[in-house]
Image (cartoon, rainbow, N blue to C red):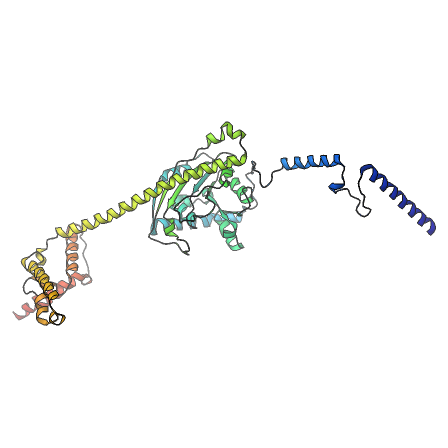
Length: 460
């Protein structure tokens, strides 16, 4: 039995060897008895290699690669699993709270000058239902969003978290750990990865928000300004994909701001107060000529993305020139206003009747002339002579006149201020002070009366 089994084994081996030789001669393919597969391209015949090349070319042309551009549609429920009920509850609390705090900070502790605000409110509140909105702006400081966005919206709009903006942020900055990821997701921030292209998940999520009629804010420059907001760089083609790949063409509203470089300078950890920010909101950007032209039907998708991004960047650069001019005019106007205020204060002091205080009488004029004469004499004297008691008394004492006596208790500038306050109180204010000792000029009058009038009264 064992001999028969060995003979049968040898017989099957011989048959396999004969079959191997036949296949080699027929297809010129080397058959490996350990790996009986025919996957190596170099052993195929010329006809098989030709069909294999055709199949590879077809696969390369039909499927998009990282270097080609195409229209990638995104469904409305693309991120329905990511946008859970828990995060919607957090957004309903965090977005209104942080938005109103930023609104108070910008409009209360700083000064915001806005031009064209009605354009933003009209696009935000009066656009058709399910019409998407994209706002684009220059990027100067790390807190442009939410500070600038919150300063442009009234508090009642900031309370509606569902209709407020979505924005994009680099994952290496805002989503570096679970804590920051949860926080930024609760304030409606979407993650994008630098260098992953325009077809990454973060861009798809932004398009899904647009497809539901939402509002997305984006910085087309891609990162913060390198020169402190002096110029606006060219826009990236990612904003072109947001415009073209949405189900319906969104409203694109540009605005440019200046002054945030003072609120949050480079390297600062906390924003500053007492600064002025100027914002200019432009008209919505129209793309009908690009999308409906004959060239658009023949142009590649990448060129369309670049054309849309170029138009947005050009509009932002024009607005940047205008907002810098407006900020300069505003600073000049404010400086002139401060000068006018100083002049008005000086006019009020000139209108005060100084005779009751002895400042307009002959003694006051004589006193001023004596002070000037004493100064001239002191300049001609030696330090020892100048410090003599006689000259000091001669120069700074003047007998007679109520003005000279009051000056021993208060400075002339304080007396002038007291006179101006008395004029304003007599003209417009009817308030009664319960404790007159708190007013410093009244203390001066009290000291004068106690030193002079009361002594004469007691001697009588």
